[in-house]
Amino acid sequence: MLIVVILTILAFDRRVIQMVDYSLLMTFVGFFIFVGNLGNIVASLASLISFKFYCKAADSRPLKFLGIFIVYNVIFPILLCLVNQATNFSF
Image (tube, rainbow, N blue to C red; front, side, top):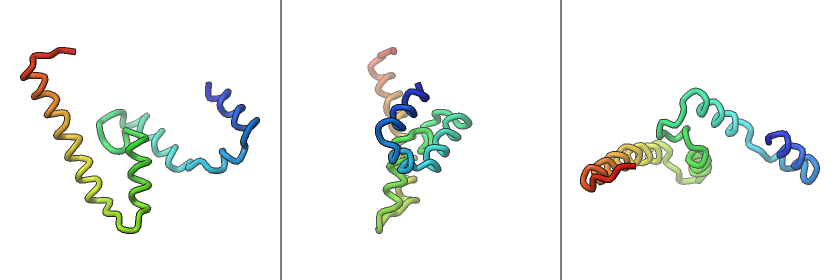
């Protein structure tokens, strides 16, 4: 499948390959392979991209962003477990 995508890009728009943020892509691949899906910012490509764009903003506060992100990633699963316990719902 990857070969088909690369060949299609080469056939229709070679400039796209130059626009890829390869460092971000390799960071995601590395963390996905070695860390797995642990609910942290590097486990989600969308979260990593959002964080990167946020950090580029003039008034960004990356540590605050990470703090809020971590809090939500701790609170939300706990909340889901509590709702599950209260409703006796099983997946």
